[in-house]
Image 1 (cartoon, rainbow, N blue to C red):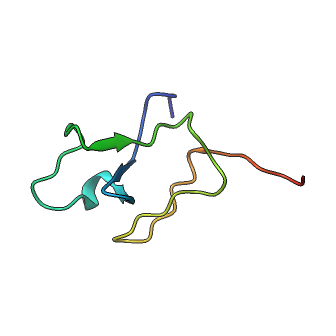
Image 2: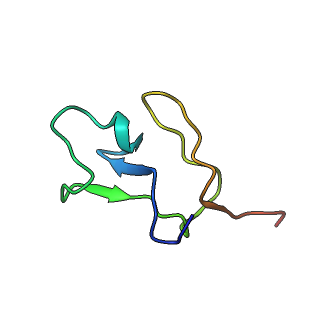
Length: 64
């Protein structure tokens, strides 16, 4: 997966798969933020609709 690719987005405070966005909402809408492959997360973002974990992102963390 290239750094600019994405299978999930953030919208209205939740994470959605591209195909799980509410009807009438597009990945191209201004209120939708792509979750790019090179983004860093503490844990894999999970779709609020189908509960798919998007583990293509960089998982950061570790012991403090």
